[in-house]
Length: 232
Image (cartoon, rainbow, N blue to C red; front, side):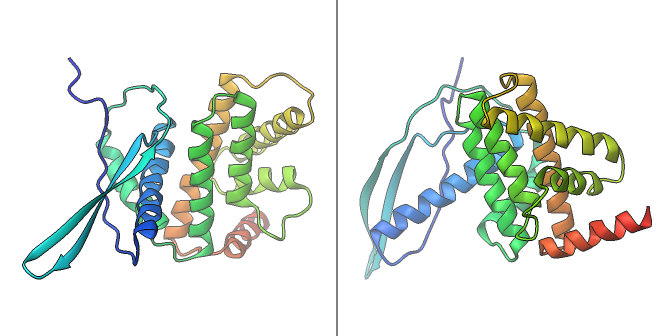
């Protein structure tokens, strides 16, 4: 027997007016959903929002109620909570709610794109969004040319092992993305999506590792990659 049909997320925000409170609450809820979407690679829809406003007055609290409206419902899969995700959830929450660097902003943008693609049924659209997610993580204003090559190279050098395999895999995935956008090539299948998600998740986690090691800009990460290239 099912005891729960949904999970309840309680967030507290402090703002100057009612509309800002609604916007900020929804933003925090979306942040939480994006982290879950990344970890479980599935969509976690926000079905509805209820808002309580508390104004402190003498003798206690005066409360009023607000209702934000409904969001669409999409029947999903049941997931078991994984305790090993607790540390990662805490870290990603800190990055998304208290960004301190350009790398934090890159991770934030990429998580939003990843979350968005989980809500879409069309495989081709999801694939393009995942490719955009990868670009958002690795490319900067200096990477205007040879995008396919730059993405593959950076992806490969972020890992100590299997660099040639990663390099070729990223090139192939970007080629498939280009073929879809230009209306040629084979349709995007589930295996393609899973492969692309594997790449994005691995790169995202590696970027978080580098961020924790003090790499707070893409320029520093590019310098690190250049140093590795000259070592070899």
